[in-house]
Image 1 (cartoon, helix red, strand yellow):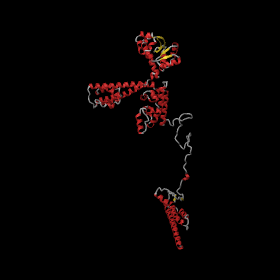
Image 2 (tube, helix red, strand yellow):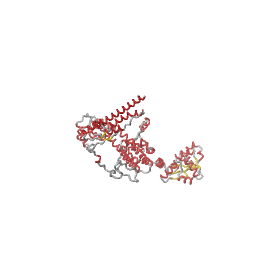
Image 3 (cartoon, one colour):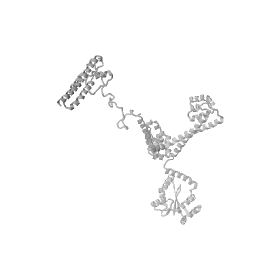
Image 4 (cartoon, helix red, strand yellow):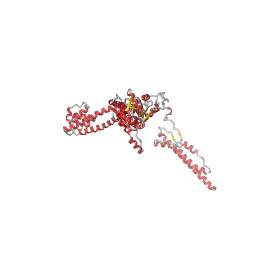
Length: 561
């Protein structure tokens, strides 16, 4: 029986000298307690050495997947014909049996045999010392881990997750320390808090100045601007703060040192995060920036997990509370999450932020997948996608409207121009002719006014005087209306129809509207009044005549009866 054993240096094939002891597997470990006992149990028959690390990695990756590597197949074909082979992996033994027709054994005794071979390996293989085996095992394990995880050591997104978390913690601590410095030193120089707004400049100024009485003799040009420096020195002379001891000032300066150190370390950490983001996710960095991209990766857990999210999830990532609250209360769902802090959304107007966030999330999802699964390290996709988002932003804000003229075959919609009924498309001139003043429509002062009867239509009076003249109509239309009245007949229906006819006649007479010129009103006023009186009298006579006719007919009816 032969035993196959894998080492970082190559494959070793041992000959089992005493196969009978394999039956008592519980006592087999005693045979490997010493090197001499192990040599009596097994003997090295052949050794297949790896030529380089690539061969070792190839063989190890095949064995991890229980596959038969090419080098091992040649080795076993040459050394194990007609022999029984003891092997630790049952799946690999089955593959060897199928391809090479070698009888393979895998049981508890074989497991104990492999354990014993591992304990005495350096003694059983000449020229392979223990100090040589350790670095080979470590190097092969590292190579195998990289191969199995299938990513480059330069693309370890765990560093980004930790860096952005530390950066946020530093911002909180830095803000807390800076506020403590302002509050503490404010007892001595309260006016300085309003003069110097920046926290780091405040800490540096306090550290340099110490007591406020030293401000006039010191030069702050390396920290503050000239105007701020002069204002601070003026305020130090008339400050209302209390005096502090030297011991208290030492503690305040020590806290200022902490603020300055944390600020410098934060700058170094930000530079490190920027370099890591440009190496791991260059396309995402161009789309949303280093900080927003790092927060998206940290929120998802890894770049691979972020690449699995759809664009709609990337858009609201970080706004989970608002999303579920909106779903619970049946209100509008949020339009953006962490992506809101991207510079492209900040450039958009408030009413366009939702649309731009949707477009940006869609393009960012493509960039993330390119960074996570693509082989190249260039940011071509990110640059192209950002240009499209910026074009969409300009289109929404109307900046590009009317500036570019679309030609046949060009992408995008044609220009929309304002409608002008007097202009023809493509020609700058007017289509309709210019309007000319019509002299034939003028009315002279000596023109004789013409009277037109317009029943059922009354002209609106602008003044009381005009309405009165309009109400006094000419007699001719009234006379015509009287003549148009039909004579009374004997039938009953004609009697009922006679009365409204007379009433309409009066209405028509009143509704006659002459065209009166503005001049000569006093001259014609008497004539118009006379005409109106004559028309009214004629209408009254017509009514009286009809009533008299009715009485006569009624009288003749009674006489005949």
